[in-house]
Amino acid sequence: MRSIEFGSYPRFIEPQKEQFVEKKEPAVTESEGGDLKQTEEEAGKEDKEGDSENPERAVEDHKVAGDSSPFPLKQSLQELFDQAVKLHDRGVEGDAEAVKKAYDLLTTLRLRAPQNALVDAYYGSVTALLGRDAIDPNERFKKALKGLKTLDGAVATDPGNVQIRILRAYVSYRLPEMYFHRTKTAIEDFGYLISRYEKDPKVFSREFYWQLLYDLGASYKRLEQHREADATWSRLLSVAEDPKYKNLLQTQGFKLSGEAWNAGFEDTSGPEAEPAPAKKKDEVAQEGMALYELALSGDKEAANKAYDFFSKALAGEPENLLLKAYHADCLSLKGRHAAEPTEMFANAIKAMKVFDSVVNSKPDDVMLRLMRARHSFRLPEAFFRRTATAVTDFEYLIGRYEKDRSVFPRETYWQLLYDLGEAYQRLGLEEESRSAWRKLLLLRPDPKYRAMIDEKRGIGVGRRQKRRLAPRNQEELFREGMRLHDLGVAGDKKAVTEAREIWQKAYDTNPRDAVAQAYYGSCLGLAARDSTDPNTLFSDTIKGLKLLNRAVGRDPNNATIRLLRAYFTYSLPESFFHLTGRAIKDFRYLKTLYERDGSIFSKALYQQILRDLASAYKRTGQDEKAGKVLANLQQDST
Image 1: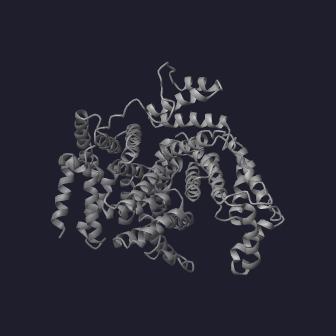
Image 2: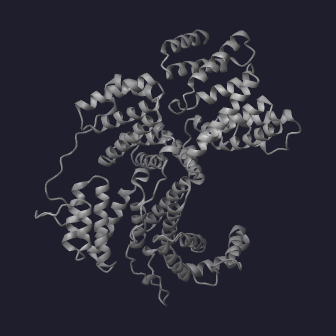
């Protein structure tokens, strides 16, 4: 799979920086980011008075001031800031080493000049540049999101600061729209900057003003807002003296004409017709919604029927955005059960594009944003990289609810906060994840959310008991390994790592021990489940499967080993591995074993095996057998 490439970082014309030159009279107003010289004096005072009360700050100061530090504290904050800006700008042009140095320096500056919005903005921009230069795609997303959040905070603190707006505009502009959906932010900032120049041409050069007009038009075009793009570019041609823009616009497909385009930003060609209002959920036929809900739950037959239903509905109302969204989601759900991986990928990618198109057409439609969020969150991050999209939509929806509690039920708000925390955790942003979950728990939601959060964070079920003395013998070691394995099955990633270490050591010590071999294989499968790297995902899955097959070969009547392999193969996507048939054989063996000896495992596990056996039959199109198993389960259940 090709890596995700971040777009080039446009070289903007730097605004004037006179405000950062130290003068006798403070030249930096509060609205322009704060006086760095004044902040330096205050910081020095704090150093003298507060080091004994803040050991962490004292340690950090010592580390910064040490001989190995390239940024000694005797250097003024203004000088450090100027140096950071130069390094940042070299990084913008592609110098990866300058980016790292700028990041280190700005990290120091944030400690020495806290709550300075301009320093925060440069820190956010250089953090995003670190993401641009990262090889690991997971690190790219993590750094980009952290940079964006920092920039948003800087703009919220000082919305009138031109330089901060420039930084956020171009970070947002360069990020791939399919994953981050920040072009709308770029449009907002470009529009603000253009408006500032038209009121006061001294804020930056006219050449930069032309560049902003060009980039604003390109942003509109990216979102398929062609009327706005054409109007903006027409305005550009009416003011720009540089002929390069005419050539650039021709490469963009912009057709020059003699028509009297409005040179401003308001469209005077008449109001655009309002799109036909999308049907609300309760207006869509109940049959289609019932099929859709079943398809979401994993029902293959329902997914096909729901797709057919919404295909017909959309044919009758081709401009209905909500029907487009349901149709796209059903296409993706249908692909989930495809026999070939290529169809699964093709359907998911088509659905992604449709969701982006309908949300761009109506970005404030709550239902459309909710559907795209859930679709993006559902896709495997290792293959589709859509968790960042889910985060964007989750945060938008949470903000909408906090402004207007009538937009959807309170329970939906709780679920969105939980999902946001999980999405951040998936991207490795633990601080942001904890913040979202802390906010949820302060609302005193349904108790299930605390249990879910504790499970995701590895709290409870005795996980912290791991920090005890090492097991004294093999029996204790195996018991601890089984406990951690089961925590891993429940979703605890740290427990998976610890369990894998235990079972790998046990297997290496005695390669002929079938139980150790099976648990080690299962742990490899759990590690693959949690991986966001496709190569690791496939290699660990194959290794784990081989170990489990060998373990079953050594001890085919061992219920524990058969149970491990059954759920390992059952959890794999059928379109990739085609192993549901093997899971069915293991489930049937375990079913027969329990019916001969009810003490072999619990009745609750037996009933779960029946449910999953029926699901496996349905996955492979054996509906009649699935029905018989479910009838057996209904008869057995109270």
